[in-house]
Length: 119
Length: 313
Image (cartoon, rainbow over all chains, first blue to last red):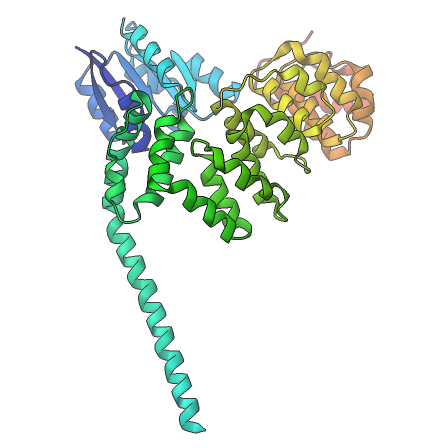
């Protein structure tokens, strides 16, 4: 079964995304702290990782190398945040983010994107 | 007389001690309830999203909490602000059943100033209701600017078809943050917005909205409109904002449009603009017609001080 990881410090946002993705043929795990995130990604292989804030990604490529060592193409990384400045979005895409979505979020759109990523 | 005065002082002391005790007890009870409320909020968030997506009424655990209606308003506001493209009917029906709208409208009518604005802001985060429009419309003429803006947000959600007229009629220039809030609200109502009619309008608030759209979506085709605003807008702040958006989009800066605006800049504003241009990667040769010889030398210094790779053409 495919695995999805949702990371955010705001538990309400995690519940929101988790409920939106409920019913997919995938096991959904959540992390609210950096330690949880590291522990889960070290133990399991995820198909999709959803990060609901930008702050953990300020460290740049190091985060992505650790999460997706070369030449792996999985997990696909989705970032969903309130930032809309093109500089932020472009730098994240350059670093290796596969999809960048902004809040407010359309649940149907997120669901279809995740389904497409899970193949 | 002495006994009478002593009695009054004693009564005041008792009243003060009682008041402090009640406040402390209230704070302690709130602190005690907080972990439970947070847990309930978390459980209820999932139920609320299911209610929104499946559009069928279901019990929300948070309603059972003490002060459940207030917590439900907070939860619906946070969830509602993070989602769009859903039918608000189920959530609205649930809130009507709880009497939330009546309660918030009563509070808005009873309170004044920032407290009233806060209540209206909460109302703007909730799905709109028919009676809200008529009762909130008078607040557009309130003496407090915060209240007028919060009422505008409520009406944008309640009557989205009148959005542009309401924004045009707002009597003061909107700040950048307020324009962001207006766009956020309009996005939630799924109203299609085109940047061109907004920027061609004569209302400065609509022009600001158009400018924000152009910047946010990096509309490169809008450079003629942006140059037009820089050259002819009577509002200097709007002209400067247009110039900065042009820089952000890396569009050509033509002297004949910019000349009038550049002449009015103070030295600090000119330096700020130069720094922005250097940061956005304009080579000195691209902007040499905009500046005098002395200013060109200064611009070259700014360019050299940036660590980005620039192509000198």
